[in-house]
Image (cartoon, rainbow, N blue to C red; front, side, top):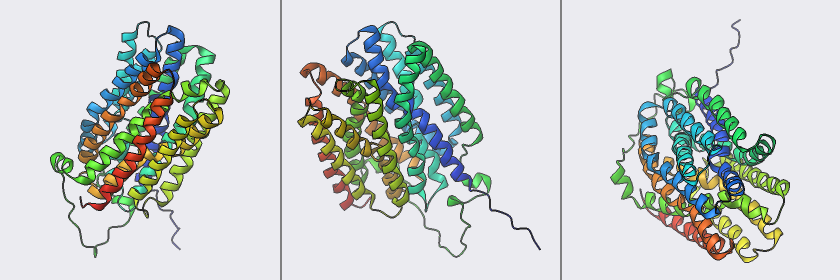
Length: 408
């Protein structure tokens, strides 16, 4: 009697879990962390919030300027080298953030964080997974991006605890070490280029010799940019991510006007937990749903959340409600663009198409920190940027549905 051998887990799912861990540390320290760095640097050095926010905007612009290269490079060479290099560059920026003494050094440190994060962000993760999945691409991407929500849950409380225990400089040294110790082994041992390199097929399913091979269109950058579908994705999510990056980098400062540090950490963790739950739902059903319809609903909820905060700027219940409601949408606002692009443009061209898409979205989203910070300094409160943010989210919901009516 032949012994029963348990089938090996498809390496693509090891890629998913590796990307999930990378997302935890990258989002903890590069997306959610800046709201802590902003508040701490302002408190220690007495620098204006608006000026430090401008340094964050530069960070996101640096990130945007290389995303197209990152997507194309991973599609051509694989993710291992890009993720390893990104971790080293980002760690340098994080350590430097804890050592700054003059404002220009903040701009330099944040630029390094943005450059490193480009190799670990949504573009890098989704480009790494694109060749590995066909039938389960929505589930794979959504599962990997759960790490971003976990980062939102643990990142800010962990950073606040570490800074209170060790001081800002030593805490940031440890943050850089944690990033390297986590990402470098994954990039070397787990990240592989294509399933065919391991004699595997996408999804880990056996090849069906009776199934007719369908040729997938290969898109150039210019062809993709002329597509209404891609234009609506870039505009809708560019607006939504402008609001998201601005809101997330300022949410600690906003909450601390109403709550103490414990209450702020609890609220931010609750928002990230809701984002995690929403991402779990998307991971379960993404491959069955009309993702543009889902995107429309997510953007409308984000508009309602920021609208509540704008209408009741002095009410703690309203600010807490807004942060929690917005947190529920934040994860899927990041996850949905690559899922839509992968579904509408295919795996072959994903790295090129989403690379340019992410670049233009990130250029828009990079305005978020400065948008919130400068308008807050100019108007004396967060009410005006929050009101405008609500309008931008509602406009984005309309735009994403316009693309649903057009062929790619």
